Image 1: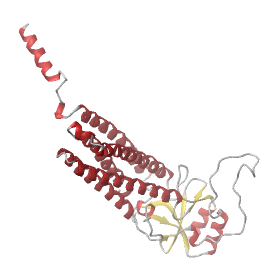
Image 2 (image 1 turned 60 degrees about the vertical axis):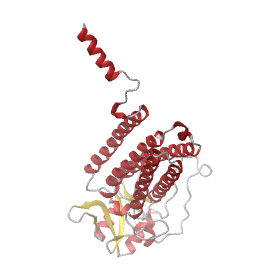
Image 3 (image 1 turned 90 degrees about the horizontal axis):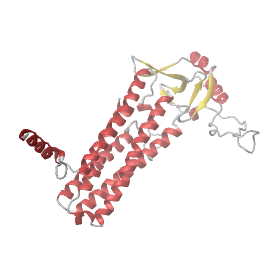
Image 4 (image 1 turned 30 degrees about the horizontal axis):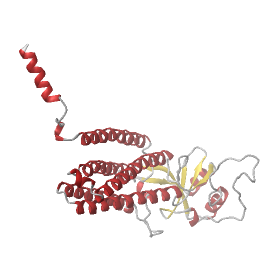
Length: 326
């Protein structure tokens, strides 16, 4: 009996709750860690699915250096990955300012917490705006291409470099009208018409001997997309279906449409996390200004939202590596 009582006493001392804090963390911190671990598993599943799909279509996957080439206010300048690298730096820098805000909270320095939280919010907003800008360019497209009836993408090159349709296509004078409720017997929602018709692209290709076609398949030796001869290109164009400009969930001028599906879903899911983090940071920021945590005697809420922000930054490092670098 005495042994049983002693065992129960030891158990109560270890798991009795109340003032007991596993790993020295408060309830709020532990719950934030549980959320981060579960969310990390979600992102891991998405990135694993992306990796397996890319491996399956490794010989036709779009090349990131040819997709993400834009830089604000530098129209026409080929700057592969530069802006994405800048976005990454801004987000990592915001994580540094969050560390400084947490450290200032430990010192009960309200002024510094306010300043560093403000910088963190600005960094998050700049990153989110940059991501929206990147989406806009990805959706609008850079060059334009032609899709064949079997779903393959044909791009156009000159002197070994990809060129836009506007660089060689001569537009005709045929009037084209989008299908709308007013001019059709049956109204169906449809995308806007491409800049050029398929016949204009084919005719311009046939009349410009300097233009060649490259397919989405990659040569293992050169790691570049295969460029066809003029005769092979003409044969491929006989099977052409439509002109493609930009990317969406159905077609992708850069190559395999599954790439666009993963891009929108994973970067969009991460962007939602960044947006949520900004909202949380703004709430905490105003509570700091109002002196809420000064009255509580601690800045633990800043530390908890900091854990979430560091997680968002870390996830982007993996997304950046999978989508842009590998």
